[in-house]
Image 1 (tube, one colour):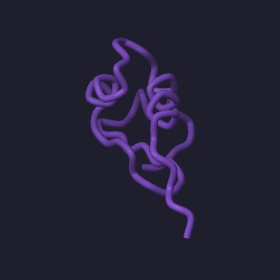
Image 2 (cartoon, rainbow, N blue to C red):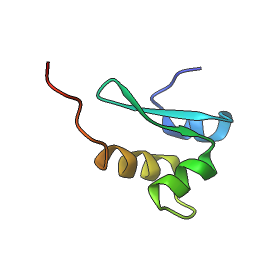
Image 3 (cartoon, rainbow, N blue to C red):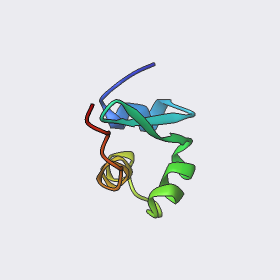
Image 4 (cartoon, rainbow, N blue to C red):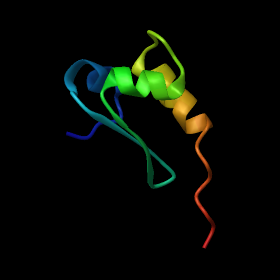
Length: 61
């Protein structure tokens, strides 16, 4: 399943992949993504924003 609606993904998905600028920057279940982002019991939207903010920009070709 693919979705941009993070609330739906949070409720339905067992594993989540976070893509930024065409690159997979994180993958795992919600608890794993929360640990990776350093965010305790936050929503997937908060975790997503933190992960994307810390992602390295894709190289310009």
